[in-house]
Image 1 (cartoon, helix red, strand yellow):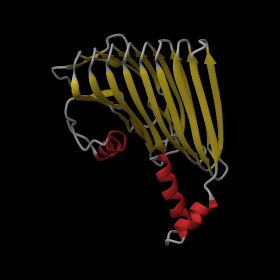
Image 2 (image 1 turned 30 degrees about the vertical axis):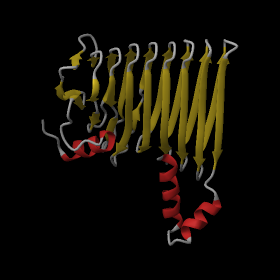
Image 3 (image 1 turned 180 degrees about the vertical axis):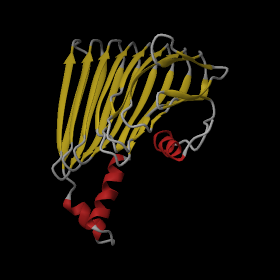
Image 4 (image 1 turned 30 degrees about the horizontal axis):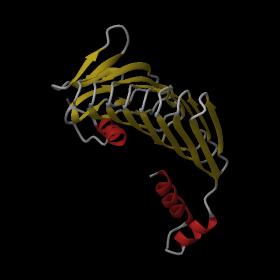
Length: 307
């Protein structure tokens, strides 16, 4: 499997790959499979009816990973891909996804990925999804990911959702349903600039007793960009849910936080926190006294905030 210079750069940005990854992988480029490998415990099979793959992770699989990055370098290309993950009982794996678009043309390029996760009893998944855009063309770089997670008893899933550069427009939708003692942790990091738009929607149902969800978004809106964070947690059983939106607004940016909590059980404990503000002046002054310019100080603060 050979990569050109742009593909390698995109793969490094979205998946920290410098070549072919170890373990199972499915690498997609410009709507075609660039390479695929299954392992003894992780089997990747192309879908027959739609574009996408099925990933079966066998029960008890430990310390293994799956990489499924997507890169697009053709302007005007649009695709929707459906990937389903079936994670067996007591498995504990890392799944690295993400999409990088380099658009140097006038047509809009768009990748819409629909990922569904089915975690059996006691399964654990760390899921990393990074989105990145580059290219000097007039065409947009559009990404609309949909993530669905269905967690059986005692299953745990940690999601790291990252977008910090170059995506023109995105609507990020995450749906989850948690059974007894299941646990969901989401850490979203998001930055927009120029005229970019980013909408994040979370809809989490705590269906089982002892289930819990912790959804935290850290975001920075620069230029004339707009962001919307919409999070809903529904407690249908004795459970705990927490959402938090912590944002920095700069220039002419706009940020809208829309919390929604619904308790359908007297022992459902649900909390939402939101804070939107500019960079504190004393932070800038402190760094500038150390020799940084104002722009350099802002960059250091933002990097630390989004880390």
